[in-house]
Image (cartoon, rainbow, N blue to C red):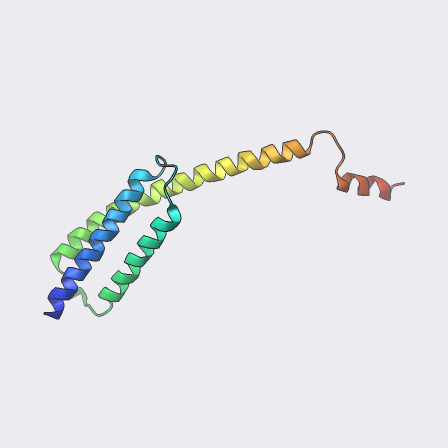
Length: 123
């Protein structure tokens, strides 16, 4: 009975994790309201639950359904990794543009405090 209960719980958590990853994959780059922090918290929770559920199992205890579901999830996670990396790359590019714009605005032809200090030391 315990194995059946554990089997159901594992399949349930794997299913939840798959839904979370599918949702994230669908919304990254399309939905400006998407909350990465919340999504990551949900993924972390599922991974923690899976760790707890799998800790007492041996590879022989893995049902064929786990393997199939985990292979599907692995493909979705690979896509998720590419999309998250692309998103982070875009965020870095925007941050660099903003940083350069701020630096350009600061260098508007007036002297900075460092330039005054430099010129005073040669007086």
